Length: 248
Image (cartoon, rainbow, N blue to C red; front, side, top):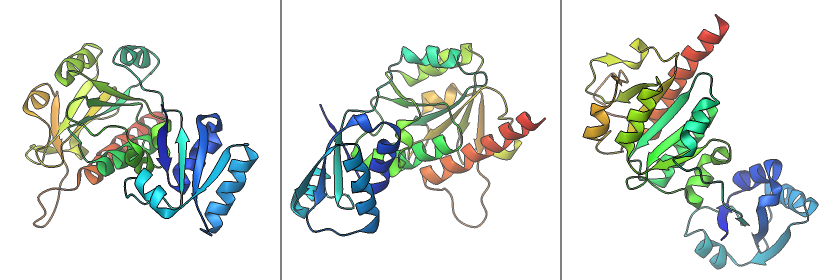
């Protein structure tokens, strides 16, 4: 089964890292763009077949999303399983995990994946029944990052958190109701940062399994931030602290 990837940058990322994954591409007939022309040269260099198509076809295949005149049919990104988690943890000297509890919007999920990879997170965990799936929109918004960081959908998030705690990973939940801020939290050791759904935040059972609850300090009348923005802020504070530890 093929996976659809659209957009110039996501397809270029695959070409640069694993071109063998691309089976064929659809290109908008008569579309002239310097970046696209450069990408087509790379595609031809890798001897991948190119088919011209009308905009209606590309719009249909991308479900109306912004495809930038090109769609690739690829072999799917490797799907990690729950059993892979402990294997991955055993290879990490100082685990840095991101748990996304109920992120259902594909654009937010893609943005969170991109920030997680950029901030050096090792693994992303998501509940199977309360999350957006890794579809073409997520892959495009993640801008190539989904290729490089393991995503694991778990059946029971609370149970998975208990397993993480048994492996000495500190679970840090986030909510605007917390008493102390992320800047008062020690994120230098093995941690799992938990970010909640766009509207309801982290679920009650997830909340109860956290070792620590933090919030992002905010001025003015804004009560909350978009989840992908909040995730980026928390990830980069963790990254800052962990870099300082390495310098010491």
